[in-house]
Image (cartoon, rainbow over the protein chains, first blue to last red):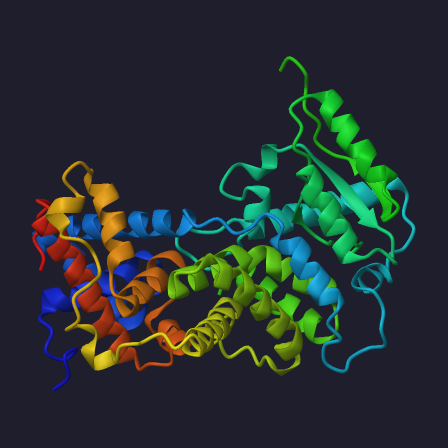
Length: 221
Length: 188
């Protein structure tokens, strides 16, 4: 008999609690834990202890901070990577934007906003879950309240150039590209003047095709 | 299956067709978690930096062969685990056998010493950090990475029963450490 088979019911339930908390438990094991939680007075206390472990483990992991320039360096490595045999060589953004059609700005913005709403909703992660990790744009906070702009890059833009520029200016891609090739760019501005300056800086870059203002800070508000 | 997971798979499909932008998006989504996973596997943020990058370059190369049998996050964690172990073996660091894991004392200082002035949450975090690697990894994968028993088995290449055994001992050791520090939680 294996060690697992020798477990008492309490041991078995304690072993399954982390998986109950992360939402991955299902079937008979899920039913067993729920039945235990409903009938054993000690179970709720045990669940509280597991939740404390959950928090402690998250804190221990979140204390490790990846380098801020990781994306930039990866972009350079990827640009140098030939990869498997696929379509003829073309910059990654050229492929993304190859199908972009000219749309009136207002129409494009509306379409992009609708699609970005979907992207953003999908980006929020459940605690301990396998959701996206848009940490670069602060998914832990309220992304919907951050100043942002919508950006399309030129087809011949280099990912390394864009990543370097974003890193240098504290700008972060929070979502996209949409079907129309629009990225959602968070703008770290607390005033309207800061926002205008940063958005102007983006628009002046040789790799920027179109920049559309999104949410802008309201001074004094 | 949630919407985010479907999107991950869709992005991998795009990567398989040569879409470099999709690799960038997957990098932004998963890099921090992969980096942290490797950092805690190896104890080295320098190695984590290199290996995390390699994981996403591997994603670029292997995407055409991804069959979607596992979640993208599980697949990436599996690649990261393999690369971390390979790097550690190259450094000729010693590893302990599965069967011995439960017998080997964890590397923490005595709980009484380290928790004298800490509250329970801080003590718990320290005890998680101090668990033996086999135990800490299943704790990390379940609590932080949201992996199921089966997925942890896939990432670590071990049977489901072994995942449960490791989780049992990991939580047991945490409970014992807390009890020794004056925080009795009633189990074990």
